[in-house]
Structure formats: structure tokens, C-alpha cells
Image (cartoon, rainbow, N blue to C red; front, side, top):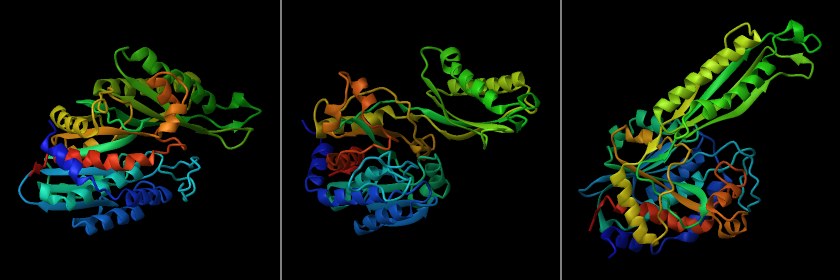
Length: 413
């Protein structure tokens, strides 16, 4: 038997203005904006919220948008979408490809804003079906891990009320039409680390008069690969990526320093601390072995928390999604190594549910090599790829996931 929330969600989304929402998505995709520069995107979202009857504020936490719709007594539910793009040169060849050189919505945040807009408008138009308060948040700077914390620090809850439940979703690779849920740890922590290796520069013809930081950095990069393979237990999940290495200016100049940028992915705080300690120890040891004139500088940068769903909240959303979309569309894939700053909105106390919406076009998925799900996932464009292009067929379902999720917690008439 279908629940009241599922029936209400299907009713409220039966007449979605799909063509209009697709146009909004194409417009957002054409005009991507980097973290904390989402001015145009914020104006677009704010305008749609005002038009739907929301009390709307802009500039929260920098470029954040908040819409509030009070609709009688009942719970307060927050729906969130991130808005920022990435410094990626688009290579999709789409007719609505990015017009901003070197900037692209390569992670689907344009789709997130579209979903949020459609859900807010549908819930506002169908307010006779539910009671409570709906908070709609367009969050800046998810990609840099700053946005959620900035909005909270700017008085998000003091100004607009503290929600009882937080809901969020993310576009992901996979055959369009699936809604992965995990009742617990769903995304990993992420930690950026920067290392500066100090050498002694000089002429390329006289290496004996220098301490070459490039050679030291090369040894360091290689040795860092042993942190996960030799210092983390086989049952633990962890990833260490050297994302950037920079040194030198000309062929025949030995530089005075080299810079290395790392990213760590972990699923427990003890493992994170163990990896940080190993990075510091290895950096110090390699520099000592090379005779560097100074100890290396090791700086911990942006950190994303683990995303851990409240089991009851996630179960409620997963159940209504199963009713709305049918058997087999909801499943537990286990935790991913990706990261999110969404949990910072929870303040360590507010229960939340976060899930994925698969968005790979059917023809792309079918043509991808491989006979298993992991093989095909490795072959199709993923988030942060210059070829990432979600299927427009997911616009309406992504709205429906948010509407049905919200109605699982609001008082449904």
C-alpha cells in the first residue's frame, strides 16, 4: 500500500514544468561560476523562490541563498543544493556547453540547483497537502569545503530557524534511474596537505653545489605511495593522491624549492591521523636523507568531514523513494570515497539523509565497455570529468526525490 507521503509526492509532481526546468538547467550549465562567485546562479535561484512565495534572502555566507516557506504548525525540513562549478575546461561538445573558459559544471551542481528549484516550486504550489516549514538553501563553495560552514557562521539558523531534518542529494555516474541510499557512512572525509621541500638552487651543470629539491620531491612522491599499502590495515579504506607537484623555471636551473599537494580520503578519524603522521614523518625523513638545508613545511589545508546518515532519517527517505520509483531503484552501494561539506550544516546534532541520483544517459551506459557494474562505472564519465554530462531525463525524477523526501517528514494532510 502506498504511503500518504508517496501519494502526495506523485500528485504534487504530476504536472512538473519539465521543459522550463530543462531550460533552467541548460542556462545554469552555460554559465558556471566558481566557489564564492556564484552571483548569477544565486540571483536565478532567489528569483524563482520569490516567485513561488518564499521569504528569500541572498548573500548568506557570501553568495548563499535561503528561502523559507511557513505553512502552519509542523516540522521544519531543510533542502539543500550546492551551486559552484569547477576549474575544468569542458569537453562534452554539448550545444549548451559552458561559455566560461576553463570553468565547467563538471560535478552536477547545476542539476542540483534545478532539482531544488523544481522541488521548492512544487511544494509551494501544493502547500494544501502538507504543514510545517520548508527551508530551501542554495549553498556556495561546496567544492572548497567552505560554503556550509560560512552559511552557519553567518547566522543561517538564528535568522531562519533551526530545522528538524536536513536533506541533500548528489548527481552520480550510473544508469539513470537509480537512487542509492546508505543508512550510515555514505561519504568519506577529505584532507588536503601541502608540502614545501627546501633545497639549495644553482646551475644545472653543477649539481654537486646544490641540494636538488626536485629529486627529493620525486623520492617523496614515490615513498608516499606506501602509506596506504604498508601502514593502513587491509580492512580500512583510505586513498592518498598526489594531485600536484611544482618546481623550477628553466631546463638548466636547479630550483630552491619544490611544492607537492596531496589529498587524503579516510573513513575514520584514527586512520586520518595515522596518515597525517606518516606524511609528516616521510617528508622529514626524505628531506633529511637528501641533506636539505631546512625541514620541509607540511601544512594541513581544507578538510571535509565524513558524511554519516542518520539511519532512521535515511530509512524514511529510502522507503518513500522505493514507493515513488519502484522496486529495485533503491539500493545500498556502501560508502563512497568522495566527500561533502553538507554535514557541517548538521552541527553534529541535526539528523540528515543524503543520497545519490544516477544520471548517466542510457546510450552512454550501454556503449561503455565491461560486463559488470564496476567495469562500466570506470568507463563512463564521472564527476569532475570534462566529459561529465548528466541525462536531461533525470530533471523530473530529481525533483521528485526531493519532494517525496521532504513529505516523508512534513505533516502531510
